[in-house]
Length: 605
Ligand code: FES
Image (cartoon, rainbow, N blue to C red; front, side):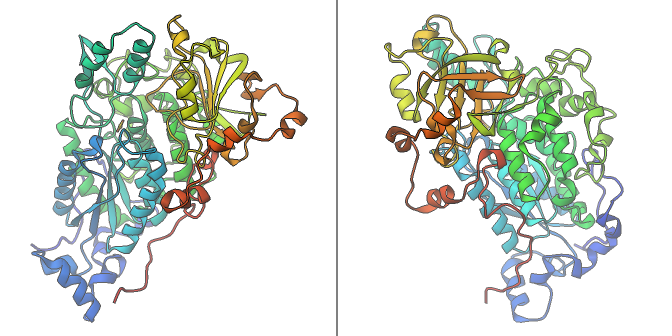
């Protein structure tokens, strides 16, 4: 097969346009300029090393594959039998591979670390930075010119984006897509959200264990990731708002044939993206992160997106802080009626017009300069979008909620910041004053929460500490603490809860999370005592404990509090605890913040 002299035009999904910026100088003809392709450093030449690199990779490929004129594209695949939400990505990879080949590139599948949210102990978040570091180093170390990122389950897209941002070679994301809606006894069943609801019903006496277990096989109905607006769905859509997905592709259900069509188009498009030199640095900018924050609020997205976006922005040195989530997103209306903030599931969002129809409603809030991997600005892709079902995608004139963005709180209990998601909270609890009931660890919580003698009522504030990045370690999704059984039996379904950990994107309730500094990092959360009065005032963006500042400063954490924080002695956990930053800056490792670049000059032999 003759190598192409020009790239092939992308399909309708890619809507590729005129290259801009650096790409404007890199015409399709220049793809054949061997000095421009990174892989040519390995393969082109008459020396012994080039011989070795070519010889071991030939395996049926034509000589034209190694002349430095055809981009070598890695397909970074997080599929694994232990990542159930990503199991189908092998099929997606084949479509990407076909597209790359068709456009004249050389597709290379690169298995990278995947994380199964429901399985991995102690929490998948502990391993996000390791997955990002592994992927970053594998891309740097290998002869690739571009990379297609295949992710789905919660931590996979964030880790891939963090890595791609650091390496800085052209990249785009193909989100694996959500599973179909589950149903149980005639009603839709949302994964995650309905687990929390049904299990609370069991604890409250409203549902038998037999009925609860009967719902188990109805929840996960097909391939794909969680079908609620949890973290996986959120991060797929956020990646598209960032510009890293071909517009219109994110949110396509995993079993839908259009996912494979989009994957094929993404394979074709990445070859052009390499030709245009369209690196993540040119796509993920302050403007595109602000667009992602607007989108996050409009979709009622997961609070986990805050920590992931901060980490991605940190890799690129962008001027984005925790406060931007409030200043940019807080006044954005909630437009998407999906669990956990609403009723429907991801399949319904796709049927109703999809993500672009949502973005069209907030078009005036989007930065028109932010590019996408299509080569054109995000807003250029909104013209034909429309909502076909206003019960799923509300109009701007009649939103589901006027102001839905994440609120950033500060005060004597969270001097470095904490967040709350008002759209998933009980409005009456957003202003609340009550006595703290403090737990030093998740084990302490589980041991005492259903104790009939525990002094707690619906006005109490449940405080859980030892669950931050250092303390657990890894910042697990435990902040949406189950309510005390005796209150559930009385019909109480929400209380103010405060934690230095995270909560599942599928969870709901008046939960203040990501409290910074965490208890294990010397935060005042470690000093609160049961009975102290805690004041939450979301309108004023305050989270305080009514203890005199001098008295609070004079307290020291007691032994039980210190015992609730982990002190790992070896391996990744030790490295992690010694270097992880706080949630307010993305919980990345301090030595991974910033970019590595892709140059590696030394040879292995
Ligand atoms: Fe994988 Fe929910 S467990 S996305």
